[in-house]
Image 1 (cartoon, each protein chain N blue to C red):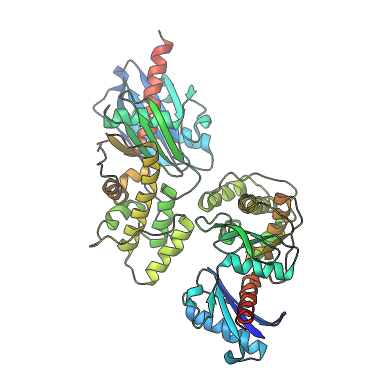
Image 2 (cartoon, rainbow over the protein chains, first blue to last red):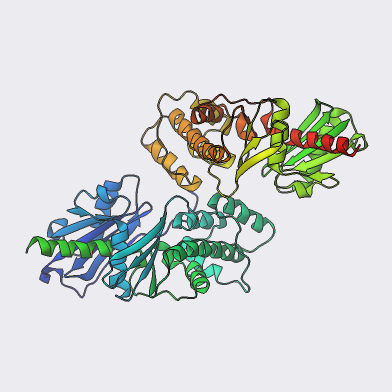
Length: 288
Length: 260
């Protein structure tokens, strides 16, 4: 089979220093996105375990798999989790969830947890959409704007480019930053046209890093216009898969003149983290 | 008087050699990597087919995205001007010309004299252009000609939610996984393009008669989708992809006459 350069690695993780059996509340959030799905388990509101995998053609199945994989090696089963919230594009397909909450609310809440309560603007750069969210110190949404019509500015667009250039998707960002001088951005917004434009640049003898630099900077510019419409208030955080692409993040920070907050946690789990926090709150409320 | 029109499109180059009101020859070449040599090839072929030399031409007008590459052209005109002139020449009752090429879609409201009254162009997004149909044909693993024929055999309208070509590719694959017949998917593809084009037509103000030109007009599935979407008959000339070049050749003749 041909190498698929867009194919990022799936993974799971848990914190061995936490004893989930000692927890009063075990809650979970499952974010079924259009491209990737994450499940997060929280032990008394602390991040305990998670998984990140590709969403298959069957969303209910993807949700179940993500949850099972997050629990793998923890000794826990789904029955041990007291409350599950589903979110994301496929949130209604999380059959074992007690509640579904929109990904906008979950991303704001998750970013508040992961980047701290100073976060006021969250940019979620997902697989097939891009959202600019403004929120308060509690992680509550105040305004948002979303592009879900067009692949420009989404992870899917980046995958198309990674495949064209035969560069593994995880390496795109660093490679794009290895240029001596910043080239002008790719002029087409449309991913399909940008792809032909990039082919043309390669034919003209541009090295891959330069083509990627031109593409990352076009993507950053595209996302900036969405952010500017919602209004960028500090502090600013980026969630989703593209947050791991330094080529886009650095250029975005440069254009906005604002640096994005950093986190030790995985930027792709923000939605599921928010869902797990909502789950904890809903469980506690149900016991009152 | 003999003139030539050259239409340098995003994908193909079209040349028409016109003798008064009669087309003497036409030629097409893929733009490919070397547009200049493709241009020379198409131009040479058309002249040869007409049995003429370059010096027999009283005028040459170029149009299309790459029109600046045409050396020795007497004038460069926009695609919408060429479309209006060509479409109304063939169909004097035409008031709307719809030109759908590989990478652009255009809606042109024409005057009785074949001039442009108003126009709308989509050049930013591949949805609503031939590239979209080609990408969907690839996803369905059929050639683009078959895609057009197939959609006429559709028995059920299925919705397509994605607007973006990239997302629509995934949607087509999901529809295939869900065992949706290819014929019905094909119709959904053409309906999606037609709906994008129709919104441009409404923007310029829809007036009958409607002429459909450009490479996409060769696709019977798309023509059918346009008829449904506009709820109107649609006129399609022979060789619809040459109408831009024909319009340019006519404008070349107009130009010579004006100077006389």
